[in-house]
Image (cartoon, rainbow, N blue to C red; front, top):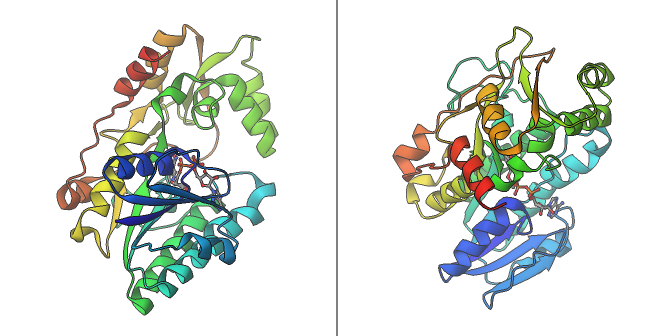
Length: 321
Ligand SMILES: NC(=O)c1ccc[n+]([C@@H]2O[C@H](COP(=O)([O-])OP(=O)(O)OC[C@H]3O[C@@H](n4cnc5c(N)ncnc54)[C@H](O)[C@@H]3O)[C@@H](O)[C@H]2O)c1
């Protein structure tokens, strides 16, 4: 295979590239930042998805495109860049893919297309109505539509993969990491909400601050702990590879989720056992965050078998400190 991977400098793209290279495939990485992958079968192109000329340089003998690159931001001031990267960027990449007569295309979408707050039913399967509640989720839904349009009109053989929240295990014990910091640690959570301009929530969080960093059990307004699916990067990558290797994936959409969702009270108890930090329980106003994602379609059609529970991820993170 000659695989073009966008987002090859990122958490997921880099790992997929490394495994494909180990398997003997040729990989071209495309990212705005340097991919830092050293391998004789790897070549990197630095450029933005919003630049069709840069994209054109990456199509050298490509037969498969894994579109994993995207901007993940929830900041209002980055909204234009978000749509430029994730919507226009996806359309640019699809145009180049069909212009180069490349048929196979995998698209990294997200569970935020459903959305995850106040879902219509649980567990969330692929037929759940798509009503994104964040601009980021909207960019992923528009990306999905662009993929399906190119499938209908240009004969693309496309697969859409809706990832759950995905992170490297080591991020769980890093109080300043991109996802886990603001999800589980009070100081990063305060900084995030101030940054979003959510001053009422930032003030509420600050009222619990004693100076020392603490772990936060975020709860819904009725006191029920938040519950979401958090995948280990290794499981998400294994799902991408299952889809890449399967004819049954063509034309389909799959959820890739962890073995089970994580309740934040249990998550925080595990993080507390490794960090020794104090714990605060906070009821967060607003829509409920409580869901489980159904990945049986990927399991049945692709043989996807997620292995990393939250507990295993925490143990793994602690063992590499
Ligand atoms: N990590 C998650 O929780 C999660 C959940 C659902 C979906 N996803 C999707 O999975 C994909 C990979 O996620 P990740 O966790 O590896 O993210 P990441 O931020 O680690 O990697 C994304 C990569 O895309 C690159 N990129 C961003 N904008 C670009 C542009 N305009 N042109 C070229 N490259 C650009 C970034 O430089 C980065 O290296 C993304 O499409 C993301 O939306 C991630």
